[in-house]
Length: 514
Ligand code: NOJ
Image 1: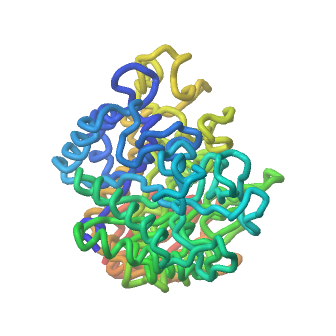
Image 2: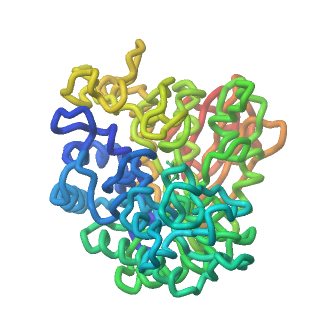
């Protein structure tokens, strides 16, 4: 694992909405450069930027038309190179977003693949042998191309699946993983990765990393085999390339495929979801960090711990404040609840990821779909920098902004929160400072749960010489944690040491050091 990953704190940038430097209403590379000092000062030392390649933007850029060209809306390749250089000049690192499972239907490979005559790209995508032959068990489309066949899609209709083969081919048209044409797809992806690493990026966040091989088994052994080969090839040339997978199965992603990091993703009702979102179709919300919640941290730990243990000494299982696919955290939690939730996320093992704007509690907005965002659109609105026009995001007319800014009263801004010592922004900044200063927080194999019990709201864990304790509830909680030899180094709220225990005030967390 590259050394810098061990202490990495990531900031995710949705480039459309971060900072518009040329007044056209959409964010760009030069805008990001302008704000690098802000990101660094907040305490982050690494960036993940969502796709910035040439695309028809039917899925916000996750529909790549040309892997080696940048989207004009964000600037030129020279601007991107300058972004890499400016990031590095500040001692920071940057990951691009790699979309290996599918392309846009407008990609040249797909144009070639859909032709009647056989060519180099005929098997770059997954086609059945005739237009009326269904691709059983997979979403597929027929009737769109000259070629007599139906093709599998990976996500939206605009995203035909690239062909990395089938684990156990059952039909004539299903190629084995080692088929030369599937190896050619692999080689093409290695080529794309090396192209950007050579240009100066430090690695990739990998989109739908588990989706490569079709007809795969439960642990995705086929996809793991393919990744392990791709990663070996890439790391032979770029040993320090950093890779984080969108997978949520570290035993496969880190243990078998060779990624160094994997995300704990938000899936309905899963351990992460119950912490901060816990929404279902009825609108009920019993998120653990809500003060009225009846939940215990065990709801999270039951899922987290086995996954963490599986890769304890091997890689990083990463917790996120949110991302471009999720409802913003501030939709469910108020400011105090967010402070507690973030304190937990930023003191756990794994590299933390902060979604832009979550540090000031940017709000989710109800918006119609933009570029395939659907319900995700409301989490992708322009960053709120200050009290000037469009909150300092852009000098464009309001009507030509990529997405509308938050027009409701009380919209948080960086400027206002910087002036208020009690703000969420300052708590985030302090927490990240503590994380950086206390080296036990950047060890990743030292999590020891001290107190977690069904039916109880408070919890505590130890990481080396540090103890983190939290009580998200409305009433005081006494935890059986002996802090005799410990001193408090950071807290929101507080508590009191008692014989052999610690009483935490309502809605408090405390970090102590031996
Ligand atoms: C996951 C990405 O995060 C999401 O935004 C995208 O729509 C799908 N993968 C398809 O690429």
